Image (cartoon, rainbow, N blue to C red; front, side, top):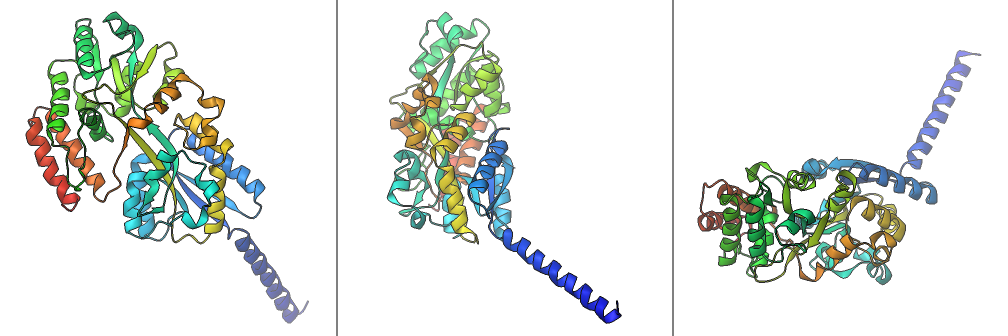
Length: 410
């Protein structure tokens, strides 16, 4: 073969290779990247499976799952967005939504939804993802909070059906202390330290942020709630050193029978079934001060505005919120149903789930407002200083309110 012929042949091969490369690129042009929050070791396998099922039903579309720890998720999303390297879809804390909307990076979803799609959802859970009349996030996970109590321990001190009020908690804890057992598990470290304070705050009729948009947690109800917790600590009715215990740590104490009562989410019952199957427990509403109240929370899945595959991304979202994928995710992770179809499934026909669902009429959601994360930190810092005896409740809460109001722009 002549050099010229050889050159032509080589160029021909390159052209064919480039053509195939082009085809390969085209074949992967419909790749949808999805950043998912790591809830448990079952999270990534679940999303990989639904991605595979979706790909089989939708040839030409590839779903790429990225599993990220909650501890680093917010920072990763912010870094990726800044570098225009974010995924097409992502699970986020619903409380982060407002900042994404404010920064104009979240895609409004109303144009993709018809009435029947919206009607799939249990109303209260769709509402937190709506900002300024537009839906930006769909409730991928939902939870509420209740009081878990050790039936054997509480029965021994006269509360076989659990405590109903904070006075009951104090009375039962004093009797348990005499038996060498910590009554009330109190969280004082890491994420949701502020929320543990809100349980008591709301039960006394207080609010975190008032209708005027200013911090309201330093009200008389707030001081009463903080004083309640400080008294429990001072009287030795909690585990020692509460500021060293995260939510998971306190839950572990309960599973081990080392504290008799703890406030937590539906997923704790899943953990107990797996890790402490012989533990007899009951689920009650959060103890009453002057009223009943609980905390409800959603995590949302959002589509980013800079996605180049919005049509395919929406199609995957649509599939995620059909009955079978929802039932599997929600039941495996230990969350509450967010759609009407999944709520009818036998997987949720159990006393624990029903106990949490019954609390939803009195549920409070974290407000979707700018400055919420800084407000939460100010509250957490204040409660830690109170727990450690470094500040009195009223003074600590007033100082935190001043910080929060700066973050809230008030």
